[in-house]
Image 1 (spheres, rainbow, N blue to C red):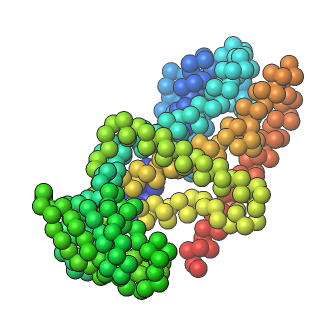
Image 2: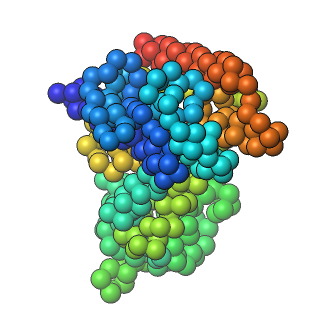
Length: 360
């Protein structure tokens, strides 16, 4: 049953990203009057289609992409598109309109990521409170043994061994290290002064040095509060920005350290595995965050100047504007086929790597 749920979630995530991306191209083309004969989700054999006023809407067997067939595309062999008036083709519109059409898919991928991330932040986004209020006490921790409770506000901490008194205003003040306390002791004893529902309580705790975090562990988590709308907007753009920077950094490493980085990429199999792990948590917010991350990935990947991707289409349009004529159709078709072949080879390679990881 879990496998079926994972497969459904996987297909919904991919389908949503593809539909949004292709809808961006489609709606931009419609705005500028470009004739679109097909709007397809997936590749390969058709499993469903419906003819609209001008466009045939299709679902195909392989859900790893999609396309919009527009009049004026070089590689198009659609007889229906050959009799379309020039003003309703890509060749009959202005350069800036072409660029908008080619980038509209990427734009919609980012819109999807922003909307989803904002929704998650509004519904379940949390920020730490300003003071040192305890949100959770870890079971069997020094904090629990000392009698600390969720809701307590730490006010003061005294280290018995050094006599140092720390006035606590936030959780950073209780990050105790050997260097900071000028000691090499594995265990220290501290006095805690806390505010508990308006009353001051004095407690004693014994803290052990944790090598992994290189700090004395008390065993508490800071209290949090829900984001307001303004904070949700702010952290949405921070999150999308961080995602984008991480992806661009990974792509730069793919160029500078190809042999090391390419083996770390994931394809559909790897994405399915991640989807399975996320789905098993039962947390809808985790699934939505994965949708957002993958949508940004698809958007940025399509910006790459590889023939057959949106980024290269933009370059073609700009070059043609600069030189004042169209590039030879045979050259563009050949480059498109080479680019498509390169993308397919990369997909096969990363899928092979994903399968190898399963059996390691």
